[in-house]
Image (cartoon, rainbow, N blue to C red; front, side, top):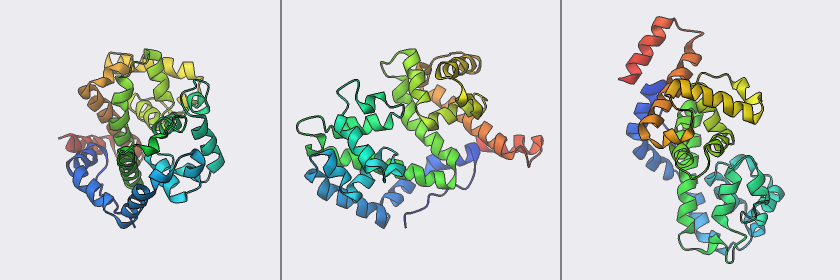
Length: 264
């Protein structure tokens, strides 16, 4: 059984604790017997994989590979995964490029089964995938204790890359819309209901932009390439999440006192 992360508080107090202890908790988690066994097997056998069919035919290799990209829930969809990986990412019309869920595109690019040879043959490939696997599995374990902390960790890991990419302003918003954890962070931080996701995609972006402009003074995702802006977004997300969770059971005075204690 893997080590279970310790998250003793919610809100900013919990986030501050996690940030202080994250390195040691991650190391302990990585050394859990089941995580270590998966990693050792991957290191030993991934070099034997030449095709997408080779990968999906090995349950343990596929488990680590999907886990590295947060796709572990799709472990039973072997034919689907094989099709995505075989089409690759070089063709703009490939399945991975057309999918709304960009995690599959990231995995397809990483494995490069449309290259000769595939990236599985590169000497540094195992360590790259293993690093992603460890990070994603730790985030999942954190989420089992407190899902808001997991969402904050995903935001911290992924938002900066989207914000600083050479994509267009609208393209960056679409990248957010294609990332479920980031959508939840933005909706909560901006005080928008989850029903916003039922709107047409262009309408969602319009609503998000308008609210971001009012809250942050800037309507575009590029502002979050700045660490201080990311921190502000995360604080709003965690504070509003805690308010939403506690509003039914606490008085407004109790909520305010709890939040003030956590922000110190």
